[in-house]
Image (cartoon, rainbow, N blue to C red; front, side):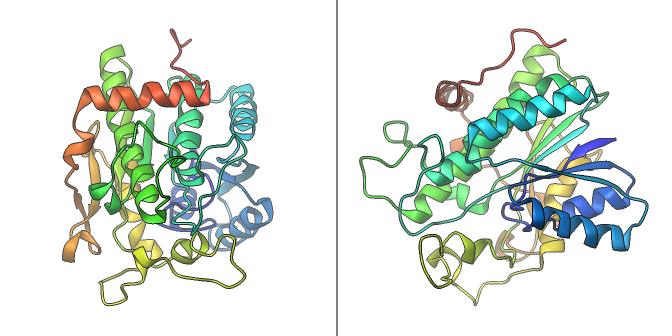
Length: 303
């Protein structure tokens, strides 16, 4: 098995290595850790190898906030000629206090959390579809429930920038990506299974890293400063994504998350998909917008 449990950033579930690569490496998968910061990736690799000496782990660099980096990473992986059984879209930035942009000029959260993973997924379709039973598992968030896709201002250029609402938009977009990719796979007769997950409220540095961008001192996001809410450790927060990626019971377009208090903690269960991700026409519209913005489109045929 050849799996991609990245890119770095662990999205909502973990940060800089975390549970997904460790779990897959322990199970005997060949793991490519796709990371933005190679030194952190190598450190995580060393930690995993200390626990699982026979694991096969490779570290490769990618920056989802740079479409050139995404293309280079995908091209190199395709050149390897090895099928990819599993892609985990598990990176993210959360609620930077001021509007920031990617290398390509996209609003940072939409670019890093959605457009980068979208471009990577579509570019990797040839090697995914070369596998016997490929999956793409994408991390969304409970914030998708109040997210809105602002087609008239996707990049938050006109209206007043809201860190939390921009984050919610990007995570709703991830859920819509999951659903539309499942629909495309069904329409084209692909064996590919597209699934989604959310981690509930998981204690990681995601809550402070994004909110501290552009600031001298670490700061928590208002979105995650409610310490009275139930929360859990990264290992437990990663379980829904692991379920989406590996369970024989996961279904096309399925969405999984914690089943405990308020859907924030606890064992994995089927999560409710917000109605805003249930309209195939709107999902297809967002996909088309992503193709235009990234310049990456579905192949007419896959060898």
